[in-house]
Amino acid sequence: MNVNQVAFCTVTALGLATAGSAIMAATTAATVATVAYSILTVVLGGASIASITAWVKTNTDQGSVSDYFTAMKDHAGVAIAGLSQFVAQIFVQSVIQGVADGISKKITRKIAGPDVIVQHT
Image (cartoon, rainbow, N blue to C red; front, side, top):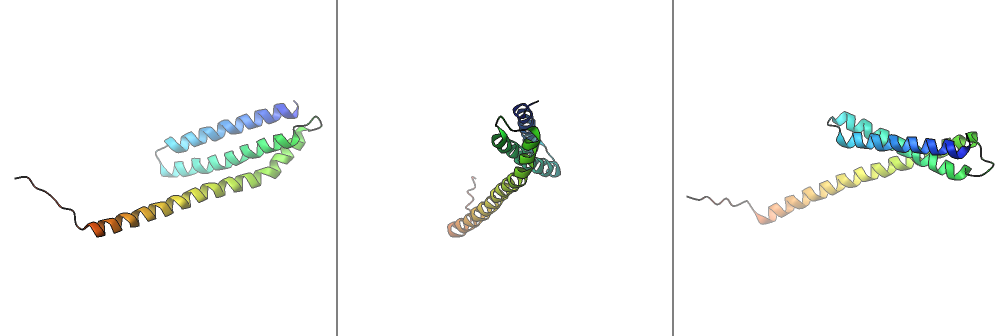
């Protein structure tokens, strides 16, 4: 097999595995399983990005399969770390937004005063 065939198979397999683990993370009911599938999604997504960038780097007539996997190994660490940082930033922004919404609601309720209950007799 040449480098394009190997790269295509690798990119496709990693893409399908990433999609599958993302779907499982979104549909599973257990919190522990959701976290595990989410971590797996980040790792597989990073590996998928690394395989694509390695394919672009070795997509020449002189590129060999071992060059492709060496480039993939070199790119994987950066891609997985970058994707992990991206996901962590999303989580931090979500927490900050939740805290800000809670504070805003508390202040609005304090200004508006107690709720008025109308009873029909």
